[in-house]
Image (cartoon, rainbow, N blue to C red; front, side, top):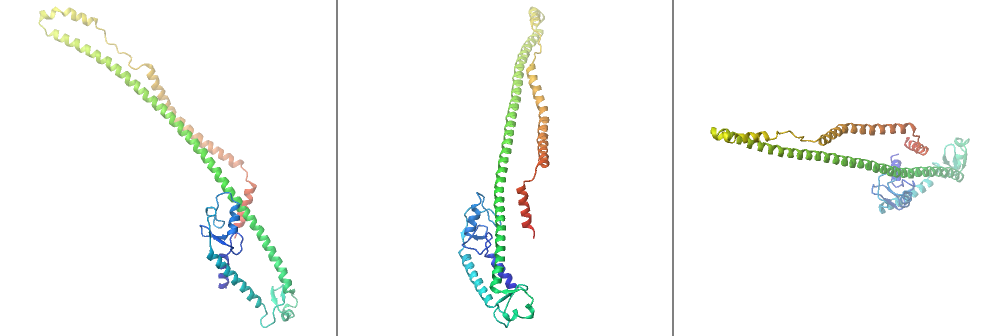
Length: 331
């Protein structure tokens, strides 16, 4: 029993995953799996791009495989051993202690000799000649092979369809990725332009306030200088002797009377205040606008997703592929 299992494992190792026959001109992919040279070329010829190993599905570069001469020699030796084993099995197909098998019992599915054919054990059984049995059962086996090959063609077609759908979906996702990136790039550009505009406006208002302040400070400084001069002159006059003080007191008082009273000018005109009010309005508007944009983006996406879930009908071809996958996965 152990020898039989080893033989099956050995046969599995030298069998092509694609054609299910002994490897012919075996080649090895980067992933380590082996295939017939003709099988892998035919398999990849059905795929436009994105070649992968038919067995493990690992992506490998197109035509990036190496001939495996040692494996080819091993397959040839195993073929010879298998042929020898079959010949020895045919030679031993005789009943133990009897003549060579000439008939075949369809009830017990064993080859029997003429002696056993006439025995009580096979008397009521359906017995035919070995040649007739071989032809009949060979037809059945060939029919099974044909059925399995058709099933294999269906699976290979599904494999090709899956690869094509994979490429189509990847291209679709990449296209949507570009749209999303373009959309957010546009938003970033818009935000950058608006932020530049408003920050520039803020700086312009600040500059205008500074200029107006400087102008007013110059006027005030000049007025203070004049006042300081007059006050100093009057203080000095008051310190003079009486007669000297009275000499020009009239002119000093007349100068005081002629001096205009300082009137506080309008430092910051209404235009500047209107500019500031505009900035206040925008800064108050901005958080609400951003919140509204965020809610619109989120709610709009959720609504679209909900509508798609309620209206989307499954693709019949997809259902066929899913059923096939479930069948292949059943133990």
